[in-house]
Image (cartoon, rainbow, N blue to C red; front, side, top):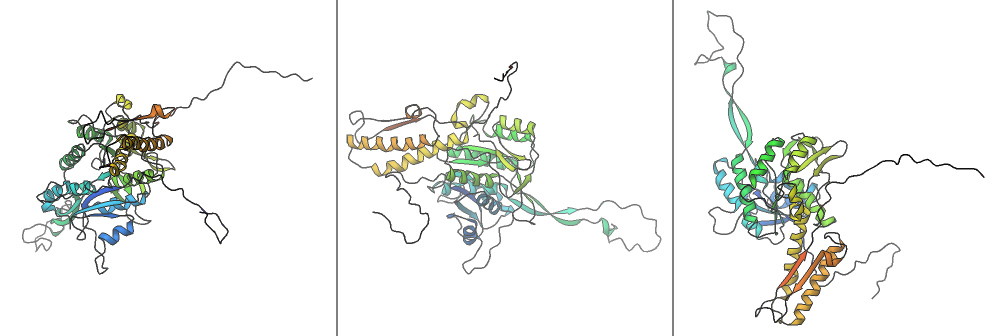
Length: 453
């Protein structure tokens, strides 16, 4: 049926989505941390910064709720939306940062505390939309008071009268200890290392469903960051369940605002989300400019870039006149140059496989309990073949023809157990072009002549 128009102009009529292909989101990020008194121990999805403020920074009567002192969650969420992210699921595990309860806070974040019901990380992983996982408050901080002493003053001339500059203890007032506030990290490097290692091993239990975005502690040199990365997966022999980004960022939320050092996980997660929505999960979330970033905590040159990237660290690089770029797309499965043969050593290959697995699960759900007949097998084969053809057309798979890029095999009724239907899918994932080389030259020894008639 044609649609009638009354105003001249340009109109768009979207083509209906093919039946059996629901939209599978792979851009949704999950974060766990201390978000304040609102929605405690709940998984709340927000789609923009205003939604986050309304959910966690405003009371029911509209009164503002301050950010928990020391929490890194707000900054990560802001960086996520500033860099193109569209949806984040927040699991709030604490009203405030309490240094006296740091171990309990860490356990609650990891979902291994004394609470009977799933909480923290375990609660987050039960949210079906989440495909990227971050723990911003592993970088939470605390403010403590420390005694500060003034430097010694030059000798004073001897006095034979009352010395009014001395207190009862005989110490000059200018040299008495003064209390000052010092901000330091809530968790030690050992605590953060354990938590990141636990996160990777937890995600290994359900392969290809989630990807963890991680960063080493602040202030590390390239050599120290490489050591962190190598120790992180030493007992696992590499892991495609995570990607590590270095160094930390210098972020300014608005003109005139103070410059803060922040973990890159929030901004990187936003680039993941924006890339997934615009181009698809098979495209590397790399060579993208980070928004709101004014510098790097650790300068990165060619030497540091080469050292870190060879070890499987994804480097954040400042490029003159072009901003701060994500200059890497490798998972923690990358161990050496030999890893280049495995597509899962690259973030886009790993994310593409995750999207295929998620889509297969959703597409197959309506077929459960259908009559186990050859018709059902033909239908499943057609649905999956059609879906993989669309994936092939995006360039996510290798091969000059679909037959070289994937296959779908469905067992016959006779070869299947009673009540079972097995579908086997194989794909040839395309790896990103990390190195592009141009050879430019001129041919020598060529002499051309022209004669006039």
